[in-house]
Length: 424
Ligand code: GUN
Ligand code: ZN
View 1 (spheres, rainbow, N blue to C red):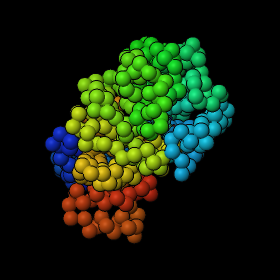
View 2: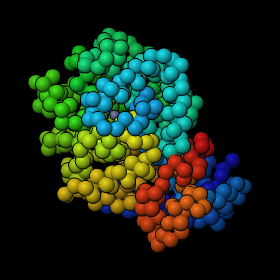
View 3: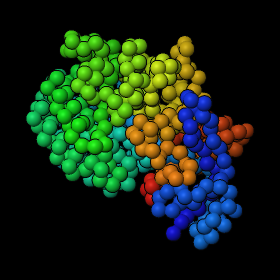
View 4: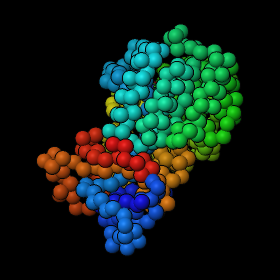
């Protein structure tokens, strides 16, 4: 049985950073078994699928959002303002992360986190996990139940965190192997090898990470990089033989097309060149970078070096899960620096959707063309809301999209689908 969804559909099938444009069409999509099997006028879709139910969607239909960097344990501590990275980790993030040793806490936080993603219109996420294998088992089970596309993994560190968050190379290896065997490739779940950051990982542990990454097909690698100048200086002292922060991962074979490194606010030219050459992706997390005072992201330099960039909310340092709002912060970051990349609404939509899908190697997610999965979010503001008023005055689809990125929030997310399933 098929369903036809008809309405104003906005997406970016090609990257606007490579000449692609915003596609805006009053159109209809035939969905069969979760896939867009036909796209055309309502009349054409109805003659193609005469028995299909027709659903008219008010507002705008966008591809589901893809969050490439978000910490599940940190949801309850959003809003810890006034601290730079290392102080925020010690005073805010790590005490919260220690609480996930308790399975009841992990269960509650996992549920709240996945609900939060769904309410924000996020359909796919690369999720920074917990330091506890028990909390990861609980999270993967809840993620499978949620219907979202989730890539995640056990976070590992063996120095300079709290003692109760430290692992050993041996334990990291067996716990990751067990989680991969149980969850990697199950439904919409995949596993990501996740050292917290090289500041907190010895060479022995990074060696184990590399072995884990090579242990199964389709695994991902994710971590943090070049976020804060004090952090970068410490990493330089801890790895005197490494040429750069990137090199602390790269020398272990952890950097490639299935690697997503978060932040990269302060990269060297050599690091950008290497990221471009390896096909790794950078998760740009502007609201977190503002909240922690980490700096302004050099997007133009990433584009110049051919580095793939997508968006991350970086909750809990980030100020919320909603990628519309993160997209606006990305725009502000470019506006606020000399030589900042002139982001247009199409760039913001691309960064929040297709760019993330590409970073996560999900080839049938990120736009709403025939043959793609129906992962979508309906944006329909309440009548009387400022966004609804502004949209009624929009002169073009680009205006409509700009207004959504400027004013939109969870309140405007009406329905969310993943693989054709209505999940919210
Ligand atoms: N670097 C290491 N851990 C973290 C974290 O939890 N958040 C951020 N923003 N940076 C980190
Ligand atoms: Zn992070």
